[in-house]
Length: 119
Image (cartoon, rainbow, N blue to C red; front, side):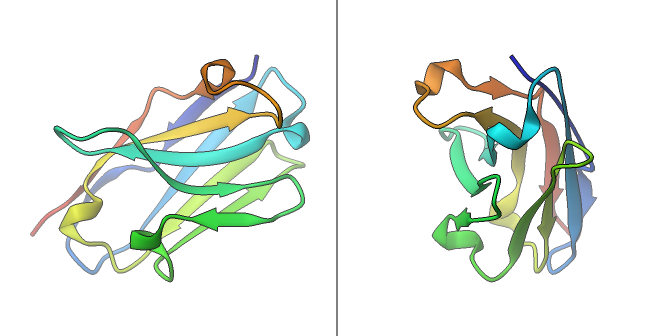
């Protein structure tokens, strides 16, 4: 199972930008669909964005046009570029890896990185 380590979170003012990174190891990276999820205080974890090996992306409606997910299969990395951040983007952001046909409970998760959007 692949291991995931996120980095890049922090405190940013509304309207600002952050770039999250996720390093993967222990698996064949190109076989995985990579995703970013977030969990706000008191809320369930939700999908933010996902990217398939070939580059096909999917975004949650609240982040469309503001966030960009990308991956580098040669470096086993996935990124989330977040622009025009809003207070409602605050939460713990988790990297996720799953292969097509796997059950959700078989996915790998990182430890999470905190993103706080506040003035």
